[in-house]
Structures are given as structure tokens and as C-alpha cells.
Image (cartoon, rainbow, N blue to C red; front, top):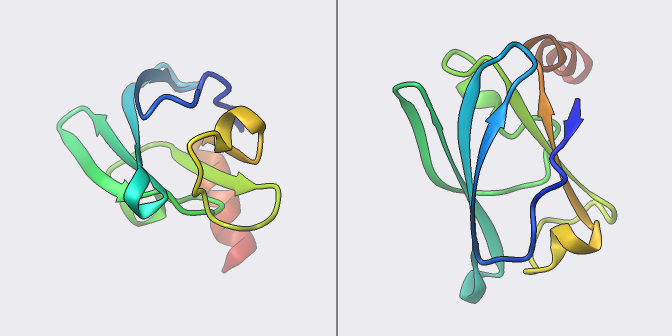
Length: 111
């Protein structure tokens, strides 16, 4: 599990993320002020996820397990949902990159 520490308080952000097994995907984050929420988009090879709401979850990419060889975890210090523009810079919200084996461990733990 690797903490994605470069997320800032910019409204729109785009990152190229390298996985431990040398795969690369694009992660986009966008803060929607009138909804007080963060949305994410992911592009990996020919697969894309567009503007889904970021929620607190041990693997919020779980439903895409057949398409993605990685996962992403979102945790908050107060067990709430991401809702503020400065959630990442204050450390209240953290996103972690999960390997495929870590995704499987989470499945076993929460099953």
C-alpha cells in the first residue's frame, strides 16, 4: 500500500501513477464545490472510469477488479467522506495505491 502524497488543494489535478509491477495509469481528481465532493477519473490502457464520486472505502475500485490490476483506498481521519477542497493538504483524507494482492487481502478480510 503506497500513500499518494502529491495530491494538493487544486480544483483539478491529473497524475500519472506507476504501480509496483510497472503499470501506469492516469488519475484525475476534481473538486465539485456546489456538491462539496471530490470526483475521480481513471484511464488504464483501453479502460476508463469517468467522474465517479470519491468515497471512503478500503478499495473504491473494487467493482472494476476484472479490468484493473490495482486498487485505490480512501481513508479519512474522522471516518466521514471527502468534502472539502483542502481535505488532502490537511491530511484529513488520504488515498493509497493497492497492489493486486492487497486488493485480494481486502476482499478476504471484508467478505
